[in-house]
Length: 160
Image 1 (cartoon, helix red, strand yellow):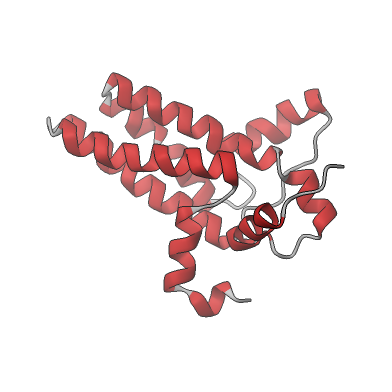
Image 2 (tube, rainbow, N blue to C red; image 1 turned 180 degrees about the horizontal axis):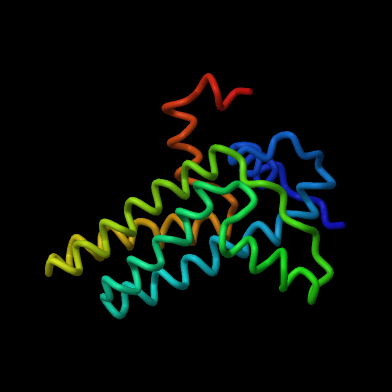
């Protein structure tokens, strides 16, 4: 199993995966990139098409992650299908800081969809683009802006 950098371990801890030991973090590091990576691609497609329908339906993906710690749509795709192809582990439940991030993404993507629907394309690109940038950073570094915001507002509960 590949050793993880201290930065990656710290980033996973800040997302709420601090209860996992280093071996588990190493095991989950790549699979945990699947959902934000695919989600980011879907957002970019919606922004490219400037489709309120595509983005509106796409907002259901992070909403499922915010509401169901074991039931995000993309995590289920990985757990029920892709992991068997690659002999990967079942993903752990989504911790609260990362679920909060999914909730923020849901709001921004829904706002982007509404902006395109009402002809305010610039705002739609800004809102959806913020999620796409955040998703790209999360996918490549495991640093999660939404988890960082969660820790700013809920410092006490995040410390547990």
